[in-house]
Image 1 (cartoon, rainbow, N blue to C red):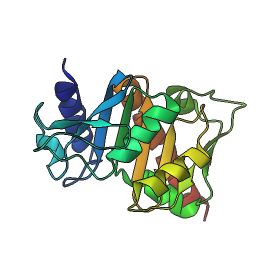
Image 2: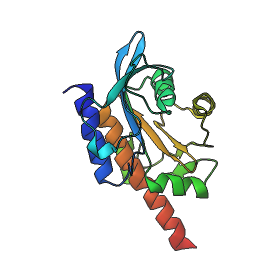
Image 3: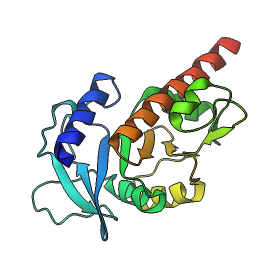
Amino acid sequence: MTPGEALAAECARFTAMGWMRGTSGNLSVVVDRDPLRLAVTISGKDKGELTPDDVVIIDEHGETEDPVRVPSAEAGLHGRIAAVAGAGAVVHVHALAPVVAAEFWPEGVELRDLEMLKGFGRQAHDDVVTIPVVANSQDMRVLGDAFEASFRKDVPALIVARHGVYVWGDDLHQARHRLECLEWLLRFKVETRRERR
């Protein structure tokens, strides 16, 4: 499967889940490490209707030499995450649970004693996982610096307040599985907080 085919398929999946509404969100996969190059979904298209041609190759700064295809403005953060975390794929969606969780816990969302943490690559018990939350910015250098300041090798996710969530993995499948599990965990956290009020 080509990077374009894989990215289009994942976008269709996330759109069906309601996590890539309108033209929101973007996904990427590393196609070369030296120098770092990523295939990333293009900007401004309904992610549920992407074709394998609706991707563009970017460098680690989110820049492209493609004269036609335009990457998302957030492509630079994908490059930064791939470079710093060594990720093979980065997924960015606008699922609601992470954004709501960040409203309640703006200093970071703490998760513990939940079986689904195993699917996020952590232990179900005796393990505290804090998902970092950073303020939103339209400047990808600012967001990239905030990501690096909060980065921990054992937490493959970042919530951007009032925006969305980034999750990464060795490949698109691992990133997808981690995202699906994290969204469940954050939904649980939000719903149980509401019930206790």
